[in-house]
Length: 281
Image (cartoon, rainbow, N blue to C red; front, side, top):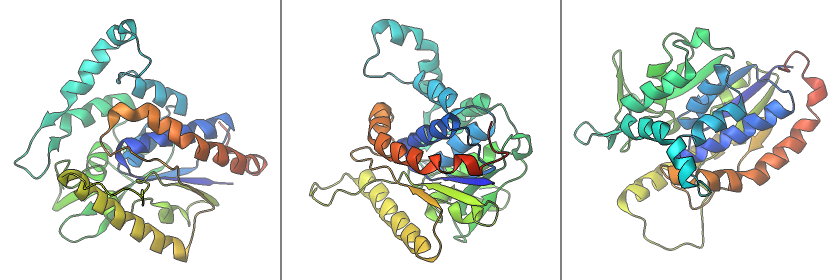
């Protein structure tokens, strides 16, 4: 049985995808094809390049200061922390708050693959054409430009000019791109890490938070409409609250809040183990 895995966008909340990959690895289930939007495309590319879920977690946390880190831990991470800090540069005039070129070049060195064809697992990366509003699907040729485009959140990252197109975050058109896997796989797993709403909260959001929050509402509405027509076989939606797109200091909270959904996923996947001949690592 060929498994299709769709990983959605959500900024730092997308690091919850790592727990999904760890669960698949533990059960010996290997996806036959992966699709990803924004952070989901980044995590999907790392995994498709041959890096395990646990290895991805280790590579991520060594670039962050965790709550339980001692001064000795921080000193040991010094070089990796500096690499991440210097990878970002502020850039306001060109339509985004952050120019992510340095970050993506750094990330690209972690993936160690230059093209889609070099990946161990086929990968589809979703972006959006800003001017035509078309969904753009990358699955061949250069990998880095596709990842840059897929994660170019409007108002946060600089849009990507590629060929004759101006591209932005794929979440604008397809937050959790499981639909591209329905005809490519026998069984589909979709992971939605979009922001959980808090109906009881009445605080006025800050301007950037309001823009990103409205963006998330539109994404959720479009996904709900798509789900009415055809659903994935397993839909994973961790309840992640109080964590904004760029709250990279809250990675431990992401893992903690996502854990119950991952436990449920494990139970759902246990019945799948015996049906996945040829998919085990």
